[in-house]
Amino acid sequence: MFTSIVAIVLGYLLGSISFSILFALWLKKIDIRQYGSGNAGATNTLRVLGKGPALCVFLLDFAKGSLAVGIGYWLGNDNNWIPVICGLAAIAGHNWPIFFRFKGGKGIATTVGALAIWGFVPTLIAGLTAIAIIALSRYVSLGSLVLAVLLPVLFAVFGKDAPFVWGASFVGAIAILRHRKNIVKLMNGTENKLGSGKKGVRHGA
Image (cartoon, rainbow, N blue to C red):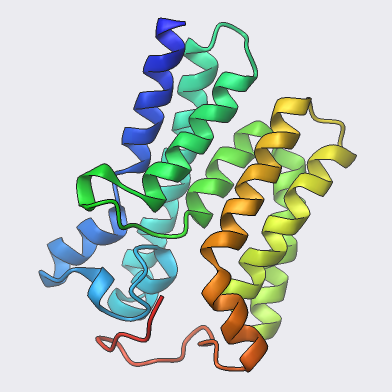
């Protein structure tokens, strides 16, 4: 029990390391949450800092989600709920980081990192579908929302154990909740497309 609690706490603390905020501080001495969309994530890093930092942020955010789940497997005593909860803790840490006044990103890269360990094949299919939608529409938020909806469906179709299906359902619900403003903008036709918007100008989350 104690080791499981330690794993969950470590997962949250890992998630709370906001690489988008750190890269912006290191490279431009700015708080990225005051620029672009105001979101501390890879997409806004692309808008504000460019492709190289954005790729680094995505990979590091992905890695912390995967590492948190790995810690859950290591310390979870063969209880599948522990790696699931550790992944959720990392996502919560990214969204509400204790190190940065509980204001973080939307957790998509961290979510995908956790899900890739929970179930690689369904996550890959959902991810490729989301990437295709982003490439066609240039709306990152739309791809993220499709990813959120597909994940629990595909986890169930591929016969994953109940903890992983429930975990995928929960992260999908979190992603939709975090994108509620984007949903309104998509419906109104005012959502920013990938590559649009001026650097250094805040457009709202």
